[in-house]
Length: 424
Picture 1: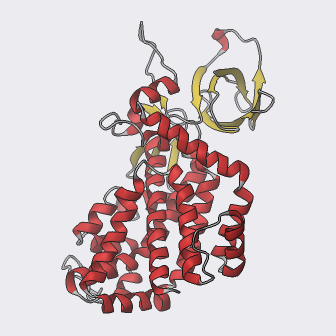
Picture 2 (picture 1 turned 90 degrees about the vertical axis):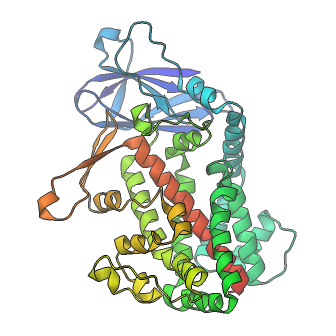
Picture 3 (picture 1 turned 30 degrees about the vertical axis):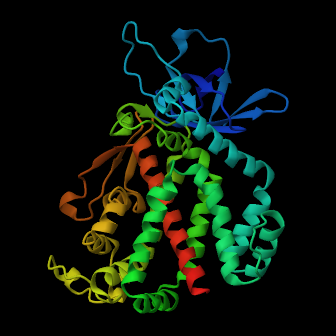
């Protein structure tokens, strides 16, 4: 089903014909560029599932009825669940397929799994979200007694031994069962377990030294504070999952059917660029703060001591990194250099943590063309290259941010495992 509605931009009075695909969400956000002036037209399509009715809520545009096609500046396809195919021009005989038809064709039977996972997550939001969000808040605030009581009441577990180890394990199992609905298929086996096994290798190499690393993490890294901040980032993601839903959908496409870059063929009509920018910056910084956890494990795996850093002779700043504490306080770009010395960590982090995008996002050096959905960013700080820019499509940026948020969960799950092992 498609909801057709003409809207007039309040800034320039240009008219856009919206074709909003009615999907599964009670509220489908949209953000599209006005072709007349470049303003971002925002709104939501509200579905009343019980009474089978629709309501279009507009922020900075107005409904316009009974306009002829000659008055319409642009026609825009919108979908809350799927990426929108980018059609160029009006070639004779060109068949414009709906986002659902395009996506289901590329997903095949995986579409059933995608829909089931999203329905499962939506069911949690409709029935237990108040209790779950309270549990998350209590746990992040380290109010473990109240968090444990609420968990037992609304999310019972087989083992309800009243100790911290059981609470931490129970908490992560509950959150994992929910957040996996929003992560790529088989993510736990492909990515989360990868970090757990990486850390396990360090334990098999030198268990006593791993104990010293855990002591360092508690005393110097403030791993509990880091855990709370990571949980807060993931909670925001759970609350804004609809901005990422089309990129979640793309992770179910059959192998070889996803173009690179994504934006060459697809648009995303659900996202708020400013909110996603904040997600990118926060997830990037958090992961970089957590890197001593993994670098310490790598040091044990390869040199048997958590504090034994690899030698890199590239430039003076790197030569000053002699301990894990030096690494912890080094700039993020330097941390990435050291991560690159580990084949295992380099493989895991190869597709995320783009330092140039982070620099541009964190220092407000980005420009979005909302019609073409193309981001221009200025990653360089030195005056000679300050005006040199690069480009990335909006849907690719959202997809990169989504990948970093998935990695935040992987590292958080590892922190949970460390806490369970250490019983702290």
